[in-house]
Amino acid sequence: MIQFYLLSVLLNLLAGFYMLFSAHDTGNDATAPLDSDEDNPAIGADSGNKGGSLFSRIFGISSNSDDRLFRIVVGGLSFLIAMIKLFSPVRGIVIIGDFLPAIAGLFAAANILLGYYMNSVSSSVNLPPFIRKILIDGQKFIGIFCIAAAILHFLFPYSAVL
Image 1 (spheres, rainbow, N blue to C red):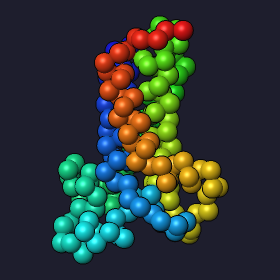
Image 2 (tube, one colour; image 1 turned 90 degrees about the horizontal axis):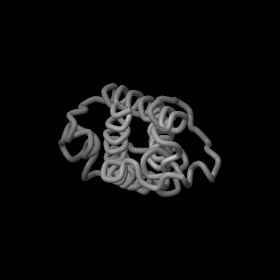
Image 3 (cartoon, one colour; image 1 turned 90 degrees about the vertical axis):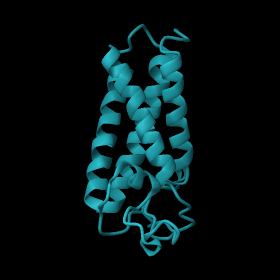
Image 4 (spheres, helix red, strand yellow; image 1 turned 45 degrees about the horizontal axis):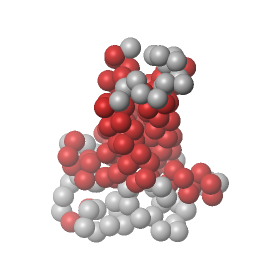
């Protein structure tokens, strides 16, 4: 359906740009939130701007509660659209048209919802090293993957049919 095609492209772009612009070096601190900008004085509260990350300033998300709502909506919708694209492909199994954007949407949803969970929990969260390496340390790479999947999906919606 054309609606899921459009939603998949838009959500992958939105989630990709969110992860790309809100990511920062967390170092070896296992309890640092996924995209908090408190460590970076050029972006954080000491610089005088009222937004958090660059993405938050561009899209006008001014408070932490707005960012939470944004994360839960984008993460939930990314997961829902990715599952729909996985289980109801348009023309068989389409690699670039359905499978690649669905995988990108699942990674985006996992990253964004994990960031929401880690920032809303009051105690520290100990993640397995494999999950930490992929979802937290590789947040920028997942963002680039989501943007690339969205662009490829937009340009070649029905290519590589198996």
